[in-house]
Amino acid sequence: MKHTEFFKILLVLLIMFFPAYELASAQDQLKFRNDNFTVRTRTISTARGERAVTFRCYLHLPYVAIPVDKDFQSLNVYVPIKIDGTDIDASHAPILFDIGAGGYVSVNNAKSNETSYRADLALAAGYVVVSPGCRGRDNRFPDGRYYGKVPAAIVDLKAAVCCLRYNKNLIPGNTDWMVVDNQTTLGNSGLTQAS
Image (tube, rainbow, N blue to C red; front, side, top):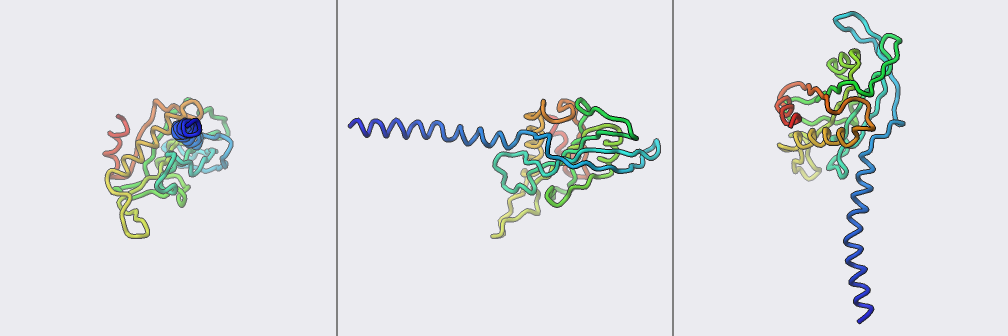
């Protein structure tokens, strides 16, 4: 009788603490690591003329703990560090949330690490740029089932914003001051992002 009581208690403890351990390790995956970046310099044409912008690129960062597809459920963060040779402190800069998809199609951040023209202009103005990937209506499992149907894109983009806010004190930029920009249909999700 004593052994069965012991095993029951052990089983209850395992059930109680194993999910907590899994959750803690999953949350650690979402912490922004500021030591894993590359540096790029680009000349950007603006209304004020040519600007030489040097920025850090943090690429393919997951924004969900257990992604359906990490290639799509990740984000790229671009942080200006110099504009025309002058050092920039972007720790409290506004954030441009640059959605690179239109028509509810997917954005694969594993294949795309270039910035858009809108993002280039924001970098030249000193903004931090976040380019999220997301699932879309064109995503399929190998067996033909779709996994990016509506509302997957909106859910993913909202998760990306939540991840930014989770990393509020770690990520450069002001997570309370985000501007959403996109190409077409997903602009409607900009209203969702504001909520």
